[in-house]
Image 1 (tube, rainbow over the protein chains, first blue to last red):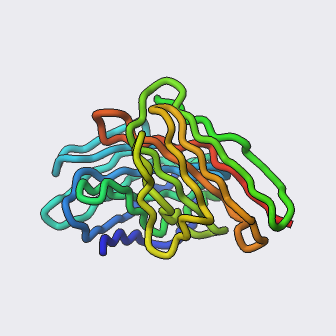
Image 2 (cartoon, rainbow over the protein chains, first blue to last red):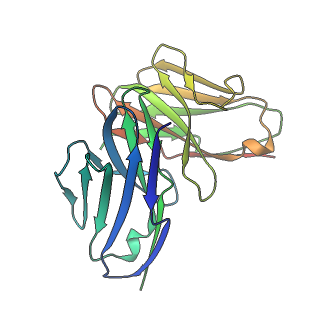
Image 3 (cartoon, rainbow over the protein chains, first blue to last red):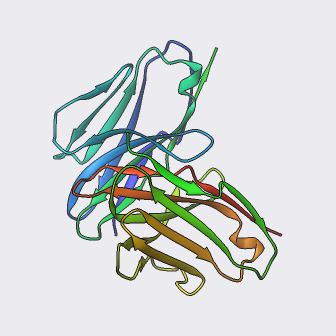
Length: 111
Length: 115
């Protein structure tokens, strides 16, 4: 059974801090790993990672994948209150053509 | 980015009735659409995968006769919750995979309340 595990489950930081969210996986026929941000409604797409060691960056967010150690991290620098959300990691597998989600990390950024 | 529209965003129905939720990819063709259910403060649980023109593949534990999924075209999939009960109340989200790609985009989700 495909498994995606995220840590920590929740995190409270002060505005301006840098955070690192972790995602590890055990799946069959890995194709890509995706990060999403979920606020009140459905998740919004952040990154898709398919190759090891290549950092993807968008503003203060960045992410990298390690296919040898089977994990990915999502970094957020200079956090703002608007970054408060649940961050979901999901792995897309080719065999079953489905996306398996982790439990999510609930991030709260306080003033 | 690609847009996936889900409708209705909120629906309240009486116990025993059926309700249909639509998921449309507005600016791209989606060969595969996924339906998820999310309980409060939990992650998304995949219910079924639907491919255009073929029967949906349901995850273990999901009743296919209760949650009817139809993927009639490359831009539309529907989920019908039949004979709804209060325990079916939940947040239902669809997503669509870009044809020929791996990126998956989500609809806005639909809150279903069964009273």
